[in-house]
Image (cartoon, rainbow, N blue to C red):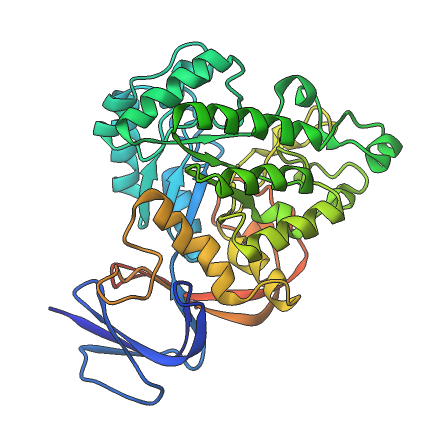
Length: 426
């Protein structure tokens, strides 16, 4: 049994919400105990953290990989390196590939590619309906047997309520988690910005924040009817929060997430049609951003993710309304989250509760904690280290980050998976 002692660390515990000095002993790939500040114990290897933060590795729910079909945008090899460099130890990958992951054979291909080329854990989702077309549900049971951890049609809404309710009922019978994109499809179709003064001044087709609330209201009604396990991939507006709160107060098995981009950017960042800031859903008002941050702090919104969506230069180098939506985020998730920490909006334990502990809990994983016996999936980082983001230095194959050339803080110094080092900064 090999052992590693992480000494002189600042331990960030999302389970107890504690942030303080200490050490961490890892034995045979699992956490074997904590040490008081200054205490030592025999170990095969000792890593002096020099006061840097040691926390559970990030679990990123909703990562888009280009395999199969769009390997020119992102491969498992490049995404895996980006994840390790960003402190992400588990990627939950989306099924909106080409072709979609709607059968066990495609899912098994994805798992083989991930195992061969990726240093981090990869847990794939399967689609909820065949071809993500919203007409016929997939064989959820077979996909679960093949390794699917959740089911989603990505950013496509299952418009037919009868089809969606049947899929939810079937998922409930198997205990499967359904991840949906709450949005009214008619109101949001063709929109590229949030409606309001800014969209009008820029001449952009806008969608009302009410579209998100209307989509969530419908989904919650179907969850009440079916009793299914449900996760809203992104809640980005203040108007949707009361409906989410009521669903939780009523005891429904409902959770929600938000992307780091919607927590740290607003609609004004689009400026003069900067397509790297075109996301789905679109960036919201500053009031919405502040409301969503407060919801993360209170625990109403459970999960923060990168919503990593690589797009090649050709799909972004277009007029704003025609450009593809999405941004890469595996390497920027942690430093962008540090903006919230340095602004005093969220503490480090609160951030890691949303980026590690809660995703693990929702998916039934043992990771995301610093408790004895938990997998030693860890990230060591300096929350104060300043740098200028250079998109060309990213490991991701696509470089579409909205943080290009921005001053940021927070550098990953090392990442460990099951106690084994998978990244160390130079």
